[in-house]
Image (cartoon, rainbow, N blue to C red; front, side):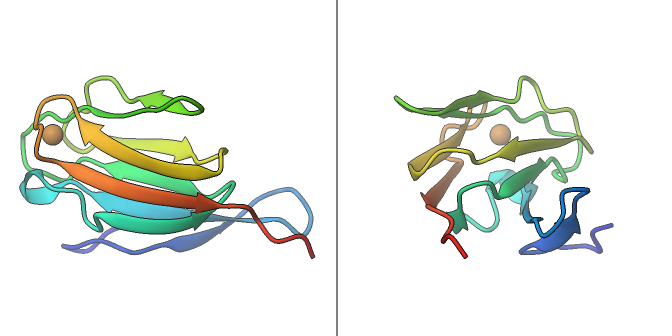
Length: 111
Ligand SMILES: [Cu+2]
């Protein structure tokens, strides 16, 4: 659980051997994404958490190769997005045009 703030990321074990997916929790408190800038590896998951009191949010990504739409995000809700494509993406909020989160996704190095 989050304690009054945000966590940059927490690792989450999966059932797949030798594969660890990283989970990055994004706060929406104060009508802003925190953090507002992320460098990720392909396959990382962002969890967009509406911890902004009783406000509704609506996160989305629109790009040529990757799109996402959370729908209406009710207070307290969490929406996970697997960043499966390499590139630079902007997460916006359909309700609050000033909310912006920049994400750069790089290829996962092969071991
Ligand atoms: Cu919003």
